[in-house]
Length: 337
Image (tube, rainbow, N blue to C red; front, side, top):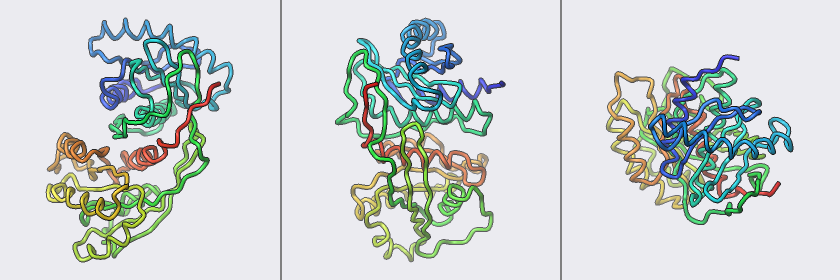
């Protein structure tokens, strides 16, 4: 089997950036415990090898227990705590397990959605499927962690419900690609002929999360971006639980209007969970908004950020799945095994 090692390494570096200071190491191991790739909190190669080598001796016995007690594909996601570290194990397909090693004082809950998303991407790399190595920084509430620290206890992470349904709105200026994103996500295709949405368009789509034993069904409300529809938007925003605010990376004006969109949405749906999306990132030569500018705006608003291309499909699935993970994170629970 040929594995794209460069993509795995790039993915791990993105993951290190997304998790931040709490990360000690991230390790991809096969079912026998052999390290396939790894990254540590240090960017110095010698320090990284020493650190990962030491931690791998700790990971191995826990991994052996997982492979003995659970058949391939059935363990999903779990945690294990030691005096110094907190470990998250995520199955990455049939061949590998993705291990996140956190500082002993870190909270597991905020990292779980990012770890699961990374594990999914790793499984796609092993399967030879197309995948972007970008791991977005998922903004989550770091207060009130539910998964408590218990030394030397292996726990399986599950969601309390089998299925969830959320109303999701897409908002942003006209022609930023909201409708194209929805069609790419729901139907897997891109429509090149632009037609403005009149009022609102409604579609449905389900996201499966096998490793967490649950699924999320989104009712997608694609809101018209033109000014003349502003009056009716408040009606459509009622009871919305999740939302994607979109701008066009090739048109600075659509980026500058994001704060107005954010305030309009929050005034009608104050409890809504939002992510910011910079669409049309395939048009590299025409970009007017950098990734850094997008991330800075997202940080100032306290939301997650990702760049996508509805035309190529890059990160479209990830954008919706990261929002779904944000929504169900509050329902995660840990069961001793």
